[in-house]
Amino acid sequence: MHTEKTFDDVIENHRVAIGADSVRISLAPEVTPDGLEKELAKLRAKTRYYDSFSELERERAKVARLHDKLRKVAQHCARPLDASKADLESCLSKVFTEADLIVQVDLEGDVAWMEEQREKAGIAFPEAVA
Image 1 (tube, rainbow, N blue to C red):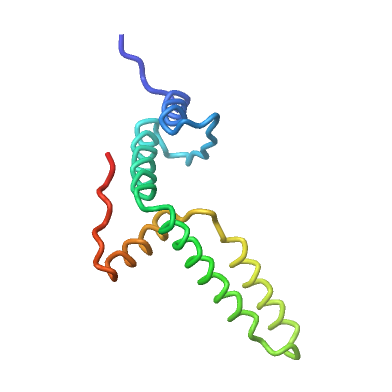
Image 2 (image 1 turned 60 degrees about the horizontal axis):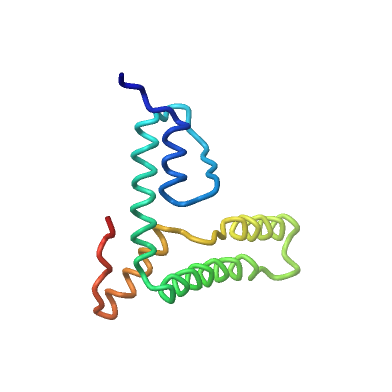
């Protein structure tokens, strides 16, 4: 007897695959269990590839990303203090928006940065881990 996969089945399989105690996933209305399963498999593959870089490379990517964010914040704060109230409020809004977007890991952005650094240094990319 064939049973259909449920979201609970897919999420539980993902939780076990990543070795987590629990997993929380927000679902879009149009997602199906099969579609979710495929996306989670892609995410696990991207995570394995990210993890195949050295710890030092991953930390450098995070610092580079944070450096870029802080540069953007500094640019937003480069307003004269005697600017109009509206200009200062706009500046603060942009600063808070940038600060809210600081994440611990940006898989795609960090991987792109690490690959770029390896390319510049003439170092081979890590093998994609199956």
